[in-house]
Length: 315
Image (cartoon, rainbow, N blue to C red; front, side, top):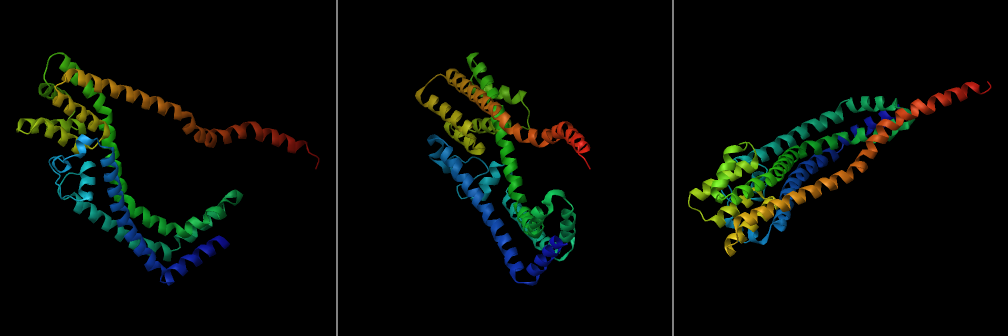
């Protein structure tokens, strides 16, 4: 079994040498660096996408739960929905636990015969596929260690993506309702209160509207409440909406017309996104169709013909 021999030899060589310590240190340091780097890049990207009205006086626009001295990690977790004061410590603890699990699991995999057994099973695959994937067994411990270190980051990124999707999904309908209520003669505060009473409490946009309403009742300026709302969500569509409302109040424009314009623009942008996704659908379906249906079609149409042809050949 040359594949299993090579895999076992490589694993033993890695464990007996000093390379294993170097690899583990690289995994640990690389995971921590990647976490901080991702948080920093995401913060810089959102600051660039944010309109100028939100960027100025940013220290005042962070909203409750964030401070000017908060770290990038704290802000990253806050935007993902982890708003408890202990969230950064919990994230660092999760990274440390994953690093400890990697430090324990990687040597165990290198010294056990699990990799050799997997390589032996791969040798039985037809068409030389086992020889092609045998290097993966040798590097499987390293890949597993990297995956363990990335688990907390992936979880936070998934939570942030889900939160942004929910906000972008609810915002057009919310603006449509606000515009309709404003056109009916209701003020902005009473319109927001009506929407708060009728929407689901678990939605992120609904929670932030409740905070916005509480800030307005506490005596803060409307402009500051707008900035706090945009900073707590940090979603480009909300930032544009807040900038439009702030500008409308500064110049004395009608709130109903501004809300209607923003609602129409959001619905138009949403239709464009749906059209773009529908145009990408054939490209995305090409690979599943080829992988799943083409072998079956070939088996039904070509294999019987080949079988008959082989049967007709003289022996």
